Image 1 (cartoon, rainbow, N blue to C red):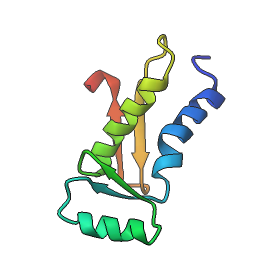
Image 2: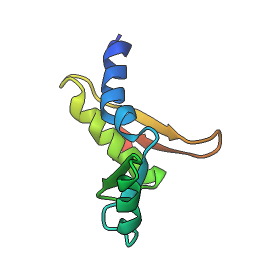
Image 3: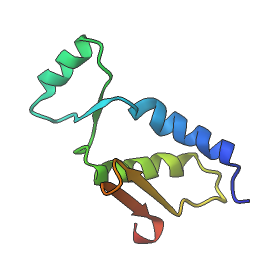
Length: 96
């Protein structure tokens, strides 16, 4: 065993699921920041991030968040962010 699945699940839930699940994600520099503010005022779950929130960019962000929480002797190999069966982005440590 490399890492207890319960520990990994806790990291993923705290860093990603609890924050991003059911959120509308905007680049904080979007020209639509007024829309984001309006949604927030209506109590929608809105996140403003430092990047364009595409699957490709989000998977990079998620990899960094997970890596930062892993024990020093554990290395993240890969992650996959999947929206549908044919729509996904993957991140591999050996490519980054």
